[in-house]
Image (cartoon, rainbow, N blue to C red):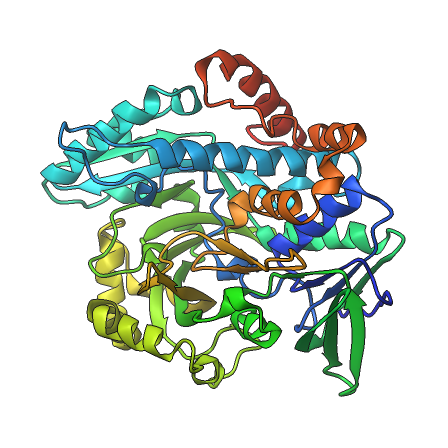
Length: 500
């Protein structure tokens, strides 16, 4: 469905209609209803790239099952779980805002975008079994993860996720489980929030519009947006611009000319999933199972076997598998995206990355050329009796790993997201290997605090924020606040119909 409403010279222009832009726009409009906003999206529909349900894992990332949030064991044998605790708290902020959106009538039918799914970490081999035991000890000691269960017993693990133990050979295995995990369709949330936004005064949404230029003006930015249906270019002016265009953000940052974008490059990695729709197999598995990273793989390519609820139907996805590509966007990208992003200011950075990350390049070539037999071998680590006839390979989204200079050296932003903001705070852009969908509310609130401090400086602004995210600014990681955290969490879960 194409959207074509326009607001002339709004306060804010948002480029891209994914989960980040949706949450930022909704929060801004709730904090200050008088703000005017315009959204431009290149695809005909909304949230069709990284936020689309088939283009990401859909995991409500809360640090529960993702081993990448907890590094290897320390010298004393313990595992540092600080990052997992931080991510858990930030995802709860997202849930609080979405539950507020349900309670206030902004969006309806939460089960269309979020559902309860067990989150399981699964490992094999003596070293990893010891690691997971230590990880569980560290995590279960915190009230966020007090319900986490650890087991090395095959019957117990099989009761959690039968596919993991069917036909499995000898050798030590271990798993942890929490039943409070979630499966999330971020594209649906984004579209629901934009549907509400489209009904608010002073808000325009125009899909099928490609932003072709950004020009700094004394009072903000001139944004040139091309209507792909007619070829007409519309100029619009805003005091503030948010670039949440996924892989397209790099090109737009380069067009902006802000000093903060100098030297920034991008390395695109395509994604693929194995999908199973066999109802007998799908029925057996009700979990998201995350495991150990593959050798040389980027962090975003840690394999997992996922229950997904997409388009009202339960299915299984396994992956992701990486693929070589030069496109920055899945649907609206071009093979010229990567070469077109190479500029004099980032050429040396890109060359350094290529020279120092040969294992990653080799991994991508191997991934892109591997056969179904090789993909099934990886799946057999999680589901030993899987048969190729039950699985098909589909293309998924594209992630552009941000490459930048750090202390004078080239480095890949391997994990998470990063927001780049101009010195005058008139433009912010999201870059990074991951869209950060689960913690999107925290990310865009940081943008609001930096670029719209006046909205949070008043008593009225603080009251509105507390209504939307009751625990924002409260350190619920501390044990004395555990009861307060649990009360708010239970209310949010009830509104989102989780656990029922």
